[in-house]
Image: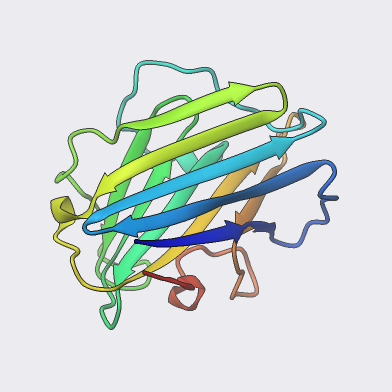
Amino acid sequence: MSVQNFTLYPFNAAFDPAILSLSGSVDRSDNRLILQYDLIDYQSQVLIPAKTLPNRKHNLWEATCFEFFIGAQNDRTYWEFNLSPSGDWNVYRFDDYRSGMQEDTAFSSLPFEVETRSHHTTLTIELDLEVIKLTQPLEISVTAVMEQLNHKVTYWAIEHCGTEADFHIRDSFGLKL
C-alpha cells in the first residue's frame, strides 16, 4: 500500500485557503488505485452540477470537473480521467503529449462516489488498473477544473509546469506509485 496526500493549487490565481481548498489522497494497493478529492468551498463559490444518471460525456473540463492523469514510468502513453460531480465521466488514452487521443472504450462505466454537504464536496473513485493493463510503477497527476458562480474557470494541479495551464505536461505527473 502506498498512500500519498496532495494539495492542488490554482494556476495564476490567488485564492485564500480560508475561501477555497482542494486536497485529497491517492492510494495504490496491488492493481487498484483509490483517489479521493476534498473540496472545501467556505463561500460556496464553485458551481457543483446536480447529480444525474451517469453518462460518458465529452468536454467535461469546460465546467467543474475532477481529473487525473496516469501513465507508466518510462512510457509516453498516458490516460486522462474526467469525473464530473454530476456523475458524468470519460476516459481518454494518449500516445504521447496531446497526441493520438482516443476515447478508451475498455471502460464501459466509471463508478465513483460524490458526497456534497454544506461547503464540502468529496469525490472518491476506486479504479481497477488491470482494465488498462497498468501493472508497473505509475506516474500520476491529480488536477481539477473549478467553475465559479461568475462562470470564471480556474485550473488546479499539484504542480503547474508550463507557462499556461496544461495538465498534459508529463513533468507534472509528480506522484510516483
